[in-house]
Length: 326
Ligand SMILES: Cc1cc2nc3c(=O)[nH]c(=O)nc-3n(C[C@H](O)[C@H](O)[C@H](O)COP(=O)(O)OP(=O)(O)OC[C@H]3O[C@@H](n4cnc5c(N)ncnc54)[C@H](O)[C@@H]3O)c2cc1C
Ligand code: SF4
Image 1 (cartoon, rainbow, N blue to C red):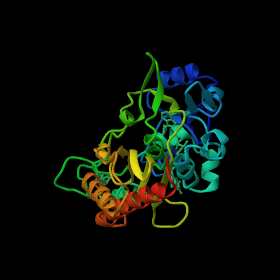
Image 2: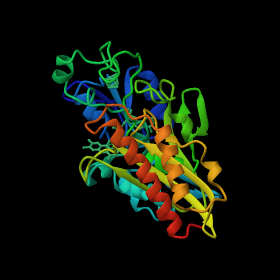
Image 3: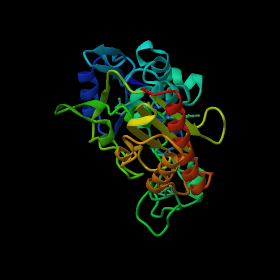
Image 4: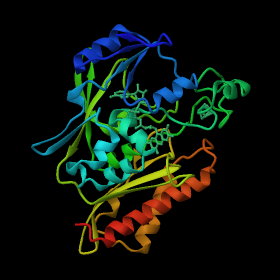
């Protein structure tokens, strides 16, 4: 354990076991991936860990390995490595999502695990300490009222990671390490619809890897954002589509930026066997608009994010069908 000039202690484990032990021995500590989310929040005093468990020397978490019918992506793999790895190329939505995350400098540092586990976001929360204190803080941190929905007792901060939806359309699992042992679960189960507690991880649990099935279907990812570069999604959509003879085989659509969790659109099975025509695209539009729940957590209006998410979904399905997804 080293100590920074600020007094903050940093552990540098070399294995998953050491990382889990260091976290358990230091209650109030946090795992540190690339720090591109956590350090920003620490500077704003949103997050105040008493020690950091730096994962950058855990080599076993920094590998992408194809074994049998699984591609295993270590949670310590950087976003830049992920985007450029030849074995990821068939998972096009993942490549497109990774290439659109933050800027090149961030992507060189940021990790898969950190991207999945990043904090939820809100214009009343991602602000300096003095800004938030002038606004009496908010329900998510140190306050007692949600400025977005003052009558309620729920935080609606939006999950805004790009990678999660792009992975979700491939139905992956994740490996989790904990003091009590390891477990595996669907990636979808990592996320909870609660802006204050949006991860199902328990204290001290570490995401170790993502397991993607081999032979992925054709896929794509797109997002709308305020700026054309270096910006979180106001709405992000991933689609995986198989089709033959112009008819849908399987269709999966996942969304980010609109809810407190990234999620797979429910009820897309009903499109199997249907032609990809205007009627079907309109139904997809309606389905997206029904299931997303954008709130006033960004500078863009909730309705814009709802309509934009639906438009992206429609466009990506049409694009993949036009490419002759097979
Ligand atoms: C200017 C700017 C623009 C950005 N734009 C985008 C964007 O467009 N899209 C986007 O998705 N993100 C964006 N981000 C957020 C951030 O850069 C990414 O989410 C990044 O991938 C986070 O990864 P990290 O390794 O740096 O996470 P860290 O900051 O290290 O960690 C984030 C959180 O995850 C936890 N954590 C890290 N690794 C693990 C693990 N293996 N298991 C369990 N918990 C873990 C940490 O304890 C922390 O709570 C942006 C950030 C900035 C500053
Ligand atoms: S949604 Fe409400 S409680 Fe959550 S961060 Fe925003 S203002 Fe705070």
